[in-house]
Image 1 (tube, helix red, strand yellow):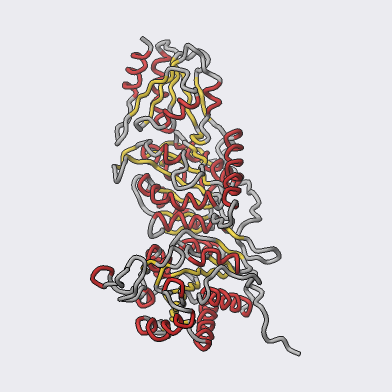
Image 2 (cartoon, helix red, strand yellow):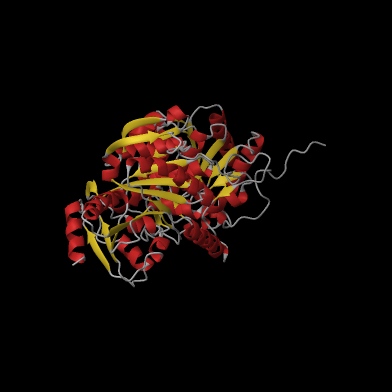
Length: 242
Length: 352
């Protein structure tokens, strides 16, 4: 009998520290599955962020480095330039990639670094207790926007993917979501595309993944995926951006 | 063997390349721009990777990445830029990565000016960023030494898996002197330390992880104790200094870097007149060469510490002598450089 489903070799078989209904576990697994399918486990190098996914390297079973908050793409740039034979990716949240690390993001993209970027957006800071992220929606209540995000005071949700689209060095951007099995399958395809692009030397590829934070949104896991589907995707439309 | 006329900044860059540095990232800042320019042209010729980073933060984190995959890596800057790099240096120290960081010091605080200064001594020798860590700090005082010391810097960084800082100043960076390179006497060591911890892809081994984060209770304390053990070993083994005329000296000058060159000028003038003046020139600022002082704590000797700062190394001299001996100080900063005549005047005052 043919075995058609098993635990990915690139994912350690341990339970994660993530809250119930959090999207990180799913995203970690998708990356592990893609790494296995492309048979690159022995040459992949992952760069973990600062944020809830700070110990992603405890879950993936391949070479990884941490990076200071926001600096994953600077770390990745050096590794890929020195070791083009390796497949280098960063895994970053919206605070990491789109607030403190915006400069590193824009410049790595503009240099056209041949990297794969997995960008998790959940419109909030999870690890530090639910503060406003650059991607927080207007009206969304957080620890630092207790009356809801007000455009006059905090500006608008930052759309990094749309910003990066105009840069010549950027070759592929897709926005996906984890709110349903169908969307999860699309997300995996996009992650695979981003890795294949790197293998083929295409250039800077980014997958922006809408994810959930039930704990700091104050929703149940079910309500959270509904909120992604019904509210978040209106502000951050899914699909190929470049 | 070659003899060339070259600036200190360029000598540091060439020394790094000859020492096997194969990655450099930097951001322009005066007075170290000759260094980044030299690297842009010559590092690729040596099959190395040069990146002009978008900021000092990016540059130091690129060095983190380069070092994480086992390559000898360096960045350089000047005082305000080095302040920006402190977060990254702390991570490099915490992750136990080797790296070389060059600080061609200028006047501060703030934007300051581009004149020579030694006012980043505390920052360099006390860690500089957050956490209980140290960097090895080397202070060359001539263009030749700036070249020669790069092999030592990379060697120590690799051996101890620690950031090594080259602490120069804009005078050293800008001045041009004859430099002997790749001669039997002046060469830099390329001896490669094995790096089984490096990120290369996990083929044929368990995955490697480079990190400074320890969440489980007790783990970070354990990691810190490991660092402390390493620092203790460095303190025991790696002190370096140069001394002159200590046997009969009544006044011992203490100065490092280009300041020591000027102090030496004063020393020569006074020696010619029969004055018993000596010199201790620390080459490693951390570990501070305490042994140099332990040997010469004679009741007759007075120390005169001379710095382009308002007394930073002074504190280490006091610690090294356990505050038992008279220690005088001459210092200027903000672009002010103690001149030979000022030093001579001060010595004459002291020997009265």
